[in-house]
Length: 440
Image 1 (spheres, rainbow, N blue to C red):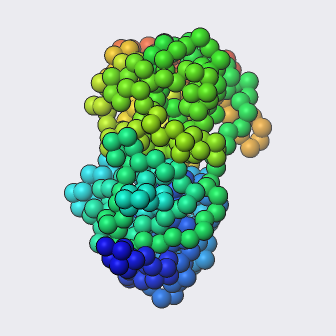
Image 2 (cartoon, rainbow, N blue to C red):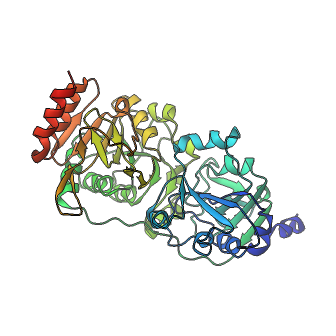
Image 3 (spheres, rainbow, N blue to C red):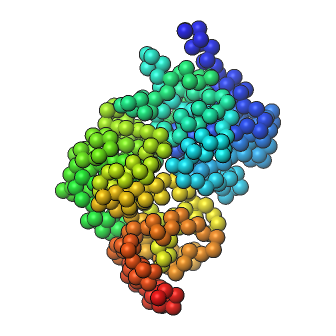
């Protein structure tokens, strides 16, 4: 057994010899990143051809296969979800975007709609029995590597070691064809700016809608974080977590004694999540208190049916713009991709179907254009070229600093009037005029 274990352990340079011309290589998603294998694969520039790298929401400052091959002689990078760093790559023409709902990814791999030839899977240090945790990015790893030709585990000594209370976040060394290890950089951190006056006003309005025992799904923007901060200072109690990405927002609630998960009908007593992204303190919390969490595959966490089995699910996400019918653009500026849909539709629908649940799209009423003038983020219609991220039938509540509009059960005209009422005052008459002319 020891001899077999040792033969799996190879250098990163040896492991990436498994990558062939024309292969699809999966790097994973979020703050988990196979940095040793990425560096080693970049060293094969000019040796391999047409290797396609798939990842998303990368928050570390560098992907070596991209930066060392800007001519794309050997490597092309594809993203499910544009993160801050990937936006910079996009401006240089070095990333190709692939739209997808995250919950659909396992089906795409499992049913052969897309393929993975080689999986670079970041894992935590193994325990005495050879089990590793999936660190801060459970993602869809199990489905992906079960469909892959070659599986390479990269042991990152800095990843939290939790494996899930029922093994939901666990893999075994025997499941890998090769294992690499070595010294890693500190884990990439995601910080939040201090909330501005507008963020605070929106968050205050949303917090008024959140009852005791609510199960929270919080996006990663400024408003969701501010909502958590206000909840931590409020009299709310017995809050729960079932979210795509666990962040410092939930850590703040836990430190305030508000996050107990005590009323959840699913995973009672535990916070459920798929990715982790935040401060080192957040990662230490996951490592030191593993019994508090139920990390799971993306199709477990993002399952609309599972979310809807819980009461009072509150989903809070940011948006770019909303039109008067209630359609939301949450991810693009014209044809320029800013992020991705992620799990927004999953949690909006899950909250809609939850008893007492509410799904919120939160956005500033306006933004400043380059010439300093204001533009309304509530618009007559989503402009051609921009994305409709969530259809009008799925948007339940929209919040700006001027109020909360409830759209469900309303006609087109009533929706338009409700949305115009929470737009910036300078734009309300223009929006109402459009509504009168187009909706009856």
